[in-house]
Picture 1 (cartoon, one colour):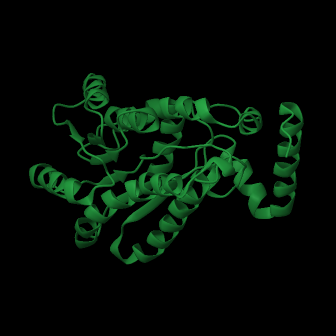
Picture 2: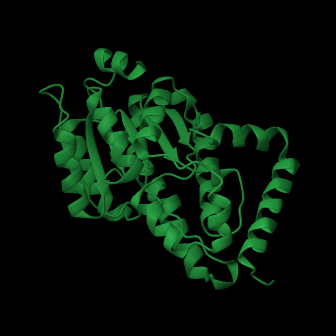
Length: 284
């Protein structure tokens, strides 16, 4: 019902969203939601096949002749390559109203199997992959004194679980970045949100599960798997309400518990890990 009312209002008519990581999963689902509600989108990703597929799918949802879908093939960690591409986009279409950052991936592995390069690689993608597009667009938004930037963290942005030694620090970092920008950009009228999804049924999650330690997989099974479309709907509704922390599904409950009863939550995660170890029979 809420969605039907939003479709009637077309709240994003005449608005533009740049969506790094918008060719698959949550980013793609969000691009579709934004487009259905009247907006135009620019999707950034590395793979051209996924970009073209997303472009074709989204264009079929057009509600107004003024809408457009642009695609940019680029690694969002590469500021030198991305800057001229986004500058060209701005020269063509104007300053975007929204930047929805969805770039990221998870690499779950036992601590003893990780190298320094594993930590560097995932920090590069998960943190700098969202920071670089933000740094490129920020001068335009600050000068215009308007705009909206969102980041994608995770439940792992405030909760530490075994197996996610490389991943969790990057999501804490994204949360920290969002907190600082929320405060500093207030005088510039630039709004900030940060999304905290739990497990979502995406291509990236399927890849993550191939290498995930058995104990980590057992702990994860306790949570309900959401689909990208569910996340996107909650995300868009929260953006319209200008919520800073966007907590879909169980993320809201876990966040509240971690705030109010941090030691209890840690005891629960320790207990779940102990149970998982018993199931796998791994000797430590």
